Figure 1 (cartoon, helix red, strand yellow):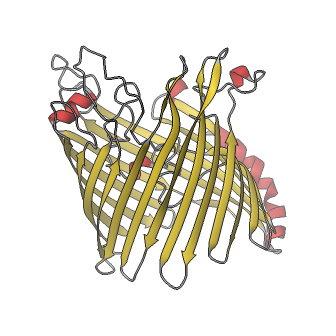
Figure 2 (figure 1 turned 120 degrees about the vertical axis):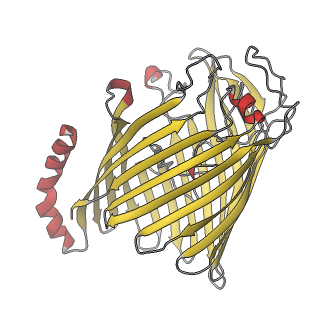
Figure 3 (figure 1 turned 30 degrees about the vertical axis):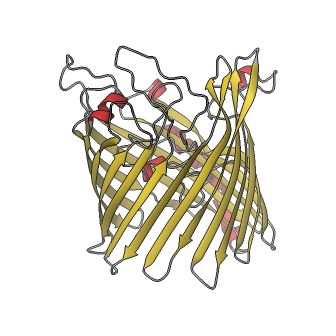
Length: 438
């Protein structure tokens, strides 16, 4: 807490200058965010066996995040600086982290061109591919240079990143297992709003370079992601469509430098209908491709089929908590080595707003693998979710949620656990976001 007090004291002397600048259409703002979330879960811990204590897979904890953000704007210049602390109640050292979450400056012309340099969030479209993953306490930001243009219904952004491992700065290129999961990134995003009709179209092209090997013998493995996102909003209906493909190569093991071709894809559709001002319903389907000939070894074996290419789709920078079930079981990450059977997510739900500032949401998810699994069914399970949010005042919000997962034998085998049939998770969260100074 003393760190935030010191930072705030350093910012306050700028107040007089900021008030003068406000007269000219500029100014300084200081915002705070205090977020605390308590969680209670039962079941679902990897590696549990029948001989263990029945309560060994229970967990109760409180995570929190504190941010102090200063923003400054003057004519064509905008600057943002955000300090962040995230951790677990009662834990010090590795469980507590203090860092600079955002630190960027942007120049913008009157004609819509802009340049932004520094650490910043990348949030695009529905955040399935590029998002800040805000549910996680650490969230996600990137050190990038972004150039772009926005005007007349068109938006085009181009940005690039280059990450370095501080342990090998003299070598200049080697990067593995650092603070970011990639070495280089180059991305081009284009969006167009079709004004005569309520249609929005986005196109995305991304190249991500990940290094493979050791500090003495390494190379960069590049993989490409390309696709699009479409929204259509006629009156009370909103339809969202997305389709992306992955190509290039992926590293099986960054230590050995063994690489394998990557060929995967995903598609999704979601429809939301506002029945009235208080009730809306939604339904959708997600498909993320998986590896073929997927075999699940028993608990005492590690072996698997050697694949000639990776067919499992992986989203590296997305806000994953928003899409594939609130219990976060299915990020379509590798189960063994780099292999995954993919995911099918069929879902539907309803959102209620009975009174001002209060909302409820209830949803159902049917989960299944995309690829067939030897001697097992594709069904992973059924997830039921309920949540509520109440805005106490303009800068104070409380929320709570409860999820129930009825798992299948397939889920137990994939997670290597004997207690996946009935999983429970509940949470209670408070978010306080006051503007301290303007």
